[in-house]
Length: 323
Image (cartoon, rainbow, N blue to C red; front, side):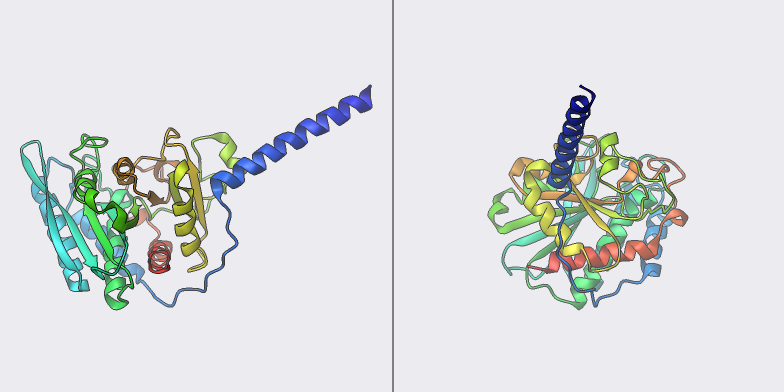
């Protein structure tokens, strides 16, 4: 009887382990592709300069400070122009005020394009260094990489306004306005990548948390990786970008494909492209699952890791450039 119980328990444990392993593979999409290290470089000091300018010089960047957001848009547009892009300011009206998305295009007309975006507004009176001056800094340095290394496909970089409350999940979001403007181009767009909180890393054990305890069985406990996050039904797009990033630098790259109902999966501008049937994902340091200063006044430029952040930019550049 005892032996029978032991065998039964062993079978149950084996079945549970198998379910965990299969589920883990489905959501994390492991890939054994190994890319050559990238030959391009991004200066961490340039990223620091952008983040400091946005989070300190142009503070505050919430919707009520329309003039500061306009200065931010001009700053981003100037860098896009200096990088050699075709630049456009897209009007975003809201609450009787006028805001702007900033759009930079490279390789216009070279087949199906990829859109890469990041929001430049901040939440309330917070400096918003990680959220999301980091994403905008990465976007600016991406523009310089595409200027120096012209892409073989069309690339559209977009700095969005009005991602933060009170506009989040409303048609007034800058990304919602941009999504509506490209709705007719669906068949010409390979996919959308949103950069949101890409600058905070923490090597301490237990520094990384997750929306579900069982995810700790699959992913690291230390916040030293960058994540590619997307909806369950867009696994091919998620794996395509993850595979293109992996190995471009020594920064670990993990991915998660999951239902949008899991907290955090749709917490950025990429959600506005899903209703159009477009592939759209987020690249992130996982925000509040790692950075305890998220949406607080402690989200300052001095807390970010610009060396690792430069590797994020390089990895995204290589993923977008690859076919």
